[in-house]
Amino acid sequence: MIISSPKDKQKLKQLLAPYASIFLVGCGSCATVCKVGGEDEIFATQEWLEQDGKDVTGSMILDEACHIMRAARELRRFRDQVKDADALLVLSCGAGAQSISDGCDKPVLTGVDPLFLGNVRRFGQYEEKCSLCGECLLNQTGGICPVTTCAKGLLNGPCGGMNNGHCEVDIERDCAWVRIYERLSHQGQDIFTQAVEPKDWSRKFKPGLHDLNRVQQKGRQK
Amino acid sequence: MSRLREKLLSGQFVTTAEIAPPKGADIASALITANKLNLVDAINITDNQGACMRMAPVALARVLVENGYEPILQITCRDRNRLALQSDILGASALGIKNLLILTGDHPGFGDHTAARPVFDLDSVQLLKGVSDLQSGHDMAGNPLDCRPDFFAGAAAAPAAEPRDLVMFKIKKKISCGAEFFQTQAVFNRSQIETFMNVVSGAHVPVLLGVLLLKGPRMARYLNDHIPGVHVPDELIKRLDDASDPLTEGVLIAREMVSWARELCQGVHLMTFGREDLIPQILAD
Image 1: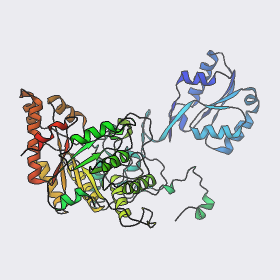
Image 2: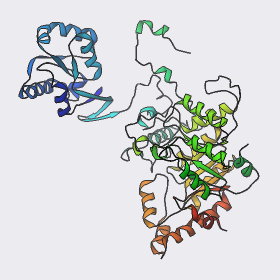
Image 3: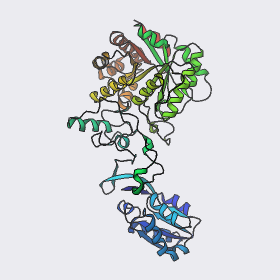
Image 4: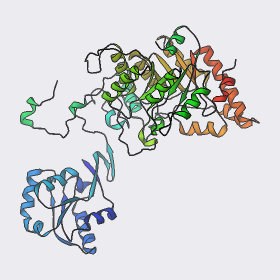
């Protein structure tokens, strides 16, 4: 799930200052689960905007704001309310916001800061375990990703900052390499005698583009 | 050829110390510090140490070469990707720099540009291999070089860091990827030095023991609380606490560490924090 947090209200107010009327867009997926762009937040934002003297022309909550075609279809369905608005305010991740900004010609503002692809521990507690790096190393590292869970993304073991098994960047956290080492040792596996080659970052296509039908012909592979 | 390598090969006990490049464009003060280091065999030039932005170390290293010093150019993986690292290393060779110390580098979160994007395209093990690649006449992508550089490339080690096994695995990787010498973090415990030397002795990689001048008990406690991989034992802190002149006691402690190094290692790397004037006392037999 994409973990996001709301933008600072004061900064958002400044961003919205030039616009008298706003159309609100929420998202029923990740943004709802992490409580930045679901029904509750859309209602609260509408109230907040109206208290500030804005006219809210309408709102919609997409099932998945990241779905480009559905977002465009929903925008058409709400075309009158969108037309009446000076700007749209999207409470979803940046992917969702861009489905909207690509689907209409009004200024589209985003009210949240997307943080990371996160696992949910419990509500409000999210952990980043995968950074979508393009070439998964989990098979070699005991199912613990060093690219993501090591603060420096190191592939050959802990750095000199390891502090009694903890990470110097966040002393509350275990060093990723201690976790990998403990798990693999427990499983009787050993990856520590061979130096790991530098990562092939050409596998991390940017901007990402993936077409299942053309995956065989995907370029740039050596 | 590296004078540092020659000395170590001939079995001489070597001494190194370090200088941070200036925070600014004037190199004069760094040269004054270098001048105080006349007893040391080689001088490490730090690379944006502690993730604090300073002058490019290669510039200071070159000026030291011009003034007859033997620099060890520190290179971290924090600020440059593999293209920049390799090209800077080739450039260092062209500038007459013979020694490298290859490091992963501190995280930008500790420095003076906390908003900087950390690079870490390579880690220290991979960059050591990269230096080996360049020395064998090709770059990390396998493309041939028209002239190969010749370096004496070393790496860092923290013999006191825990968990020990994990630390030692990485040391072995550094050796297998071309580390030709080690400079260690400060160690204050003889058995930790012995354990470390047992691991590296088979590989015949010289070790310069990190010897840190403790200026007082407060500094010792600070190191224990804030510097990963460094542990000042309680008995040493007590000695500093009880001493009428803690700095003199600190020099005595450093001399003991140097005597361990003379017995167990191939040299020392001195960290004196502005008290270069005390180096003759620290090195006195």
